[in-house]
Image 1 (cartoon, rainbow over the protein chains, first blue to last red):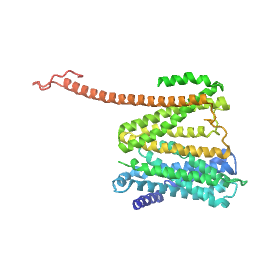
Image 2 (cartoon, rainbow over the protein chains, first blue to last red):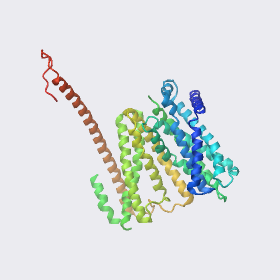
Image 3 (cartoon, rainbow over the protein chains, first blue to last red):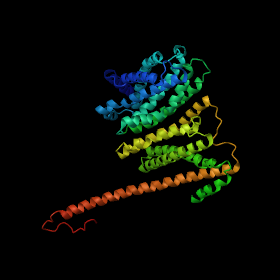
Length: 224
Length: 236
């Protein structure tokens, strides 16, 4: 199963490297949204809850772009039939797709976080880097799992571009709650008691529940 | 069923002594509980569908979610009326139950667009079932998340189902909860029957049209010299 998943993942990454259809738009989109927030909020520097809120909502919206494109290659070229004809476990597809999404998100954050720190963020992020990393990893896993699931769900519908954000955003509310609350103390000017453990716990719980759900139901999405 | 409902509506006013607006409690809270249970039941029926591949389970799941969605609209409306009456605002972000309910409502609003943008009925049922299961799992996770988020900034002081309800009120509350549950089940069954009847009607009508077409094409065609075509009354 891992071999098949690795093969699909390698294919997706190769397509991504050649076409730059997901990651590049995501990065561009996030930076544009930061600029928009600068004008919309009329502030040069953000901190605390406002900063973490802006950051996470932007990352979330950028995720939608990638989720929309996640099965695009399979759709346009009819590659899904090939994958389904191959005698492999359907979970491999899920594994490959969510890993691809996870990698896209990591690349996005590698670029967008420094950009955010440069453009909008007041306090220095470097001091809180280990904590931030933990939040990012857990939140990204959640985004990747749910993103791959929603992408699979919407892949056969007529109005795919419409269904994805409508489904994805409510499902990701707990991620925003957890991640934004966990990042808030890290980005505030005045240090105050952190409640990091609780929020990391929430994110981990979310990841666990939806990884299980996705693992259980993904077979049914790719049946014919 | 009717008896229990009428019991609620005639018994409840007796002990609602905290002003008139408090009475909405007997409508709002059972509505909310039943709607949430309906969503989760829809998820469970979806699992059953995926296990058995019996379309009737899919229909049950669909009807349960559909009805819960209707109830959820009622919950949001009665909830904001109640909030206006007792807290002075139409919407209160501090109340975790309210917020989680709104999120769940928004999620389930996508159920029908998702379902009806897939043409193939079998695939439609399968995808809808996957959605129902995912969303069913989402309900409790979301409640935990939102409650945590509120407890962070606001200690929870308002409790919608207060632990110290007087006995009479509690009795009315339970009765109305049961009645609402019964109402849900009745409506659910009713809707199932009507859906079933509609399908049956569609099937019969199609068959009738088919036979009508056959009849007219046969009747309209110039009859061959030897009467091989049996004389069939049109529309039989």
